[in-house]
Image 1: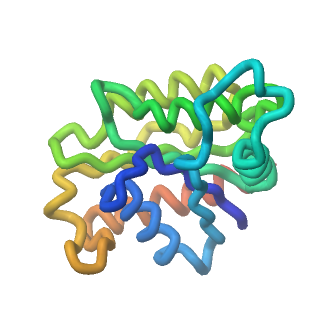
Image 2 (image 1 turned 180 degrees about the vertical axis):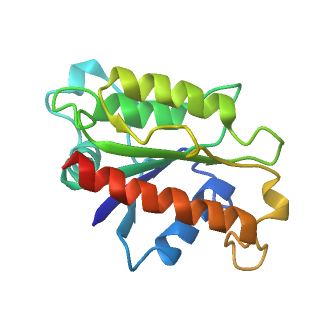
Length: 181
């Protein structure tokens, strides 16, 4: 199973990127997780959408060819970061690669809410794009107090309770992908 993961933070030591890398390693027997490069995407430009730059073409092709997408986002100002919105804007135009695509949302924050508002906004956006979202009830991956749950040396998520919950949600996502195809 091939999965593209879009991480809404381009910060080098991002907890959200650390979650993506944890998932890449932890679930390698269930799925091949490719982490998309959104740093190289130019600002969305409608004048360019019919003949986009190479980075955009490759990004959209990776989503189109994937069995599913995992979007991992921090929360900036009660919403998703601009770099993530830019990536979604590119992916939603012309070929519209999110239509019918199984998507799982997750997020990590240092505070108590664990990206709840950002994920609500993300779900609203993706619903409008006709993505097949993993139903939220019991599947909200809202990792809070990140500094207590990630190992500083390895950068891996190490909190047993959070990992156990994540395992269950990933299993449901695999089932969601199979049911969507």
